[in-house]
Length: 154
Image 1 (cartoon, helix red, strand yellow):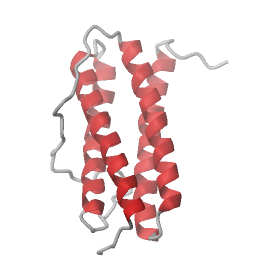
Image 2 (cartoon, one colour; image 1 turned 45 degrees about the vertical axis):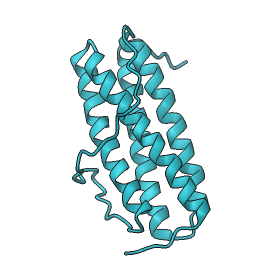
Image 3 (cartoon, helix red, strand yellow; image 1 turned 120 degrees about the vertical axis):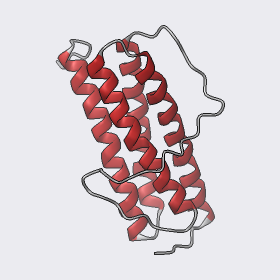
Image 4 (cartoon, one colour; image 1 turned 90 degrees about the vertical axis):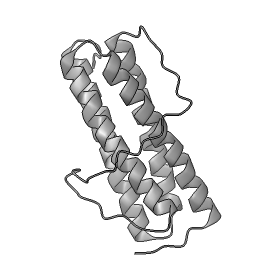
């Protein structure tokens, strides 16, 4: 299905594209730095999903509505952009979790705003699907942190 994007919609998608690229860089770096194998697996799983999100945003920017797999198993072409990425070393697993959880909260909120700005229901559905997956990423990191005593819920 082809779509015509307004300038505002295109700008919102470009913003989301940059957010997805930032998530890809963070998850890649953090997966390589994580000391705990369970955390490394969480970061790698979320990385794969972020790459799929980037592919979907790129499809929207090219005027096509991607088919969304509700189980989150959509194939991706692994075309992530990592140019200009800064690698921060010597972060603890807790520091990486705190940072990526904050990032996921921000990205999910940005999707929420974008969803309300799109005319096309099919595009809204794609963005809503991605937002739900972003929330699942945050949930996986939160649950890990809570299980390790890094995040205490009062």
